[in-house]
Length: 206
Image (cartoon, rainbow, N blue to C red; front, side):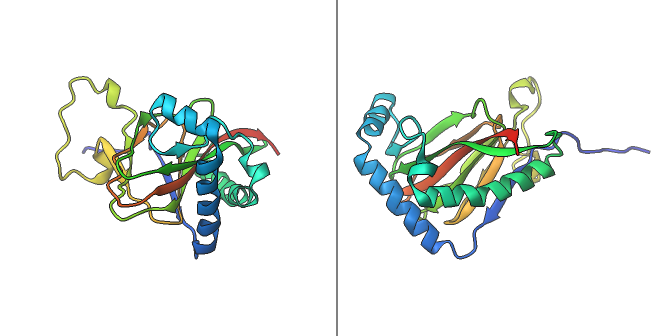
């Protein structure tokens, strides 16, 4: 008698924000204002070939300087705590704390190549504007590099067996994952700006 058991799960947390229109309008206004006014950020994006605009390198205090970003962090805090609980972490009285947060304004034709987020434990993105056709976020099986001679998966294999998982967000979607999980944003084929807010969490004391 045989017994096959699944182990070592990789969890991706997704939540949909009810009635996000007002929040998203305020976030979009803030993101577009930053994209227009942050000259240092514009230079950074040009230097490193980042399509569109990101405040990642130049605006570390967004939650203090922009009230709607602070509001968003407070909302995400609850989800990060729930995700940490689902991961069964022994955080010894600590809790997930937002360590950094930044806005992204990606035009048609923009993409973000495969990467991980270092020096954090939970990363994620909240989606403000998602034009039709702007595409998913793609996660890579973290074991992929050590599979060596493993045969490819069948095209019709169940989703949890695929080497890549695609999540197509909508406006108001929140996605969380462990920071070591490699991911990418494929080419934005939508006719408009894909606007999102990304962030990292560390474990700190209450």
